[in-house]
Image (cartoon, rainbow, N blue to C red; front, top):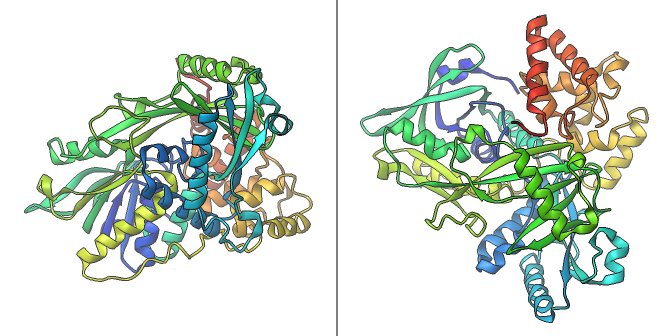
Length: 539
């Protein structure tokens, strides 16, 4: 996958996508697979914001049942199974426990009924060839059984827990990237660090956008018959500026923070009800993700970050409802914040706001052929993309069918994930992080390892995460990584558990500097940027 700016500047496309998060990535894949000419530009790196800064869940949305959004839940559960099938290395089952307290029979009956409905709506959860990917129905665990599985649930009024299953992404960034890799393989023209600065509009019809290459400051036009803005929390801001007026559809931005700490639970995730809401305890890469908050955000989306107050308040909130966790400020090794772009229905309530998605046709704003995608969630992004491209097909006068629900992603051609992992361990006994690498690359693992060539040093660990030097070269040569942050925080796991040790950043930067001909000043600047970005808080 290469940045081909010549193609972007000199061809006319059927569709231009502005925004390289998961929605844009899935639309690019679907559009390219149907044989259309599609271009995508992203002002930063792919999947660098909302698409990365989330709870890493592929889930049906159990709590949406209380709003009677049965259609959204069913859609989400169907899409959960599709992600498990097309990307089994990156999406796996995850058991959840929901603890109950105080002996309320009504609460137990109500939740049990909701979980029964969840099971009914996920009737296809076992329709997977790989037994390891099939999800059991829910069950009730009495107090002693639940505590034997997860002692952290212990408190005097604990009654027991319901157990149910959803799925978890090992790396949202890489799952989005694999959609882009597939789009590229089917002819899409993609580029990160290319910002759309204005829209090309003539006689009320969209003709594409003027863009700036952030690496050279060069500007050029991209011509397209249709344009989709999929910039998440920035969508209405971008459109208002591009059209010179306030557009009809608005976004409600919800800030969610996550904290990474040492393991809190053993194997299960915990969904803990609290003060009319809930929080998650999520096992991930031998650590725990604590998530998430849900508060309205009205500032500049580029400024969102985790504050010291955020951390203090969230830890206190969790400890008050899960006292056996005994979490301390010193336990927090990493934090991140993201913004959910929700459809604004005028209530101002972010927690109960629907996670549905909308495709907006901006003909009401005076422009033909201009669309934006707002709302939605990670789980349903593939389905949203299919519906978007169905709409565009009608506009373009053809109607090829989508194949994304059955076509596996580039690393996902795996029939039995446990057999595949065992085979990789036999084939690569020298790699200490083979489990991690298998999860990150799937069937692309050997192609990545080939970058090591005859250099044993590139097969040696970079820090404690299981990542190796060959990944750095692979990220540059095959995955459009341009900066140290791209490699450390998105293409690999080097920086996903907090700031790496100084020697790890130095070794990683050395590999990149040699490959990209960085001088000493550029190398130092890249290290400083990553170091500053991976602090646990900012003032």
